[in-house]
Length: 135
Image (spheres, one colour):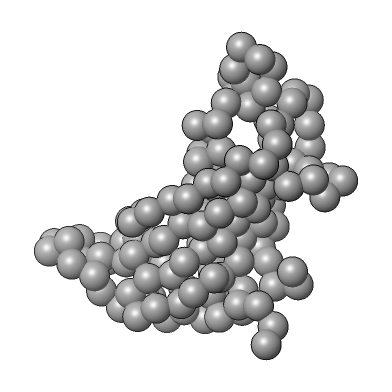
């Protein structure tokens, strides 16, 4: 995948469960942090007083546990781009390329007053288009 946003994840002792690997609930936190880091790289606002993203669904396919200590990263890419939503594909990978998790999150931008979908901010649309796979 050449069109990805990639960010390292710093594992903390508190991320571990009794089996000395990262608790599966922490994967969602890693993905959330990566999305925020990606949004923060945009040249234009990704949310404002009128609209903001909500997660409509999240799919995680656990492939291999992450044992502590480890160096992993989250990779994000655009699976599908809609009018008010973007399907963000994700992978959590080790330094050697081992895939620990993959899946997708559907993020929908909504009007903060009504809760109804609103068009994607222009900066999010442009950034998402850059993360579409090459045709």
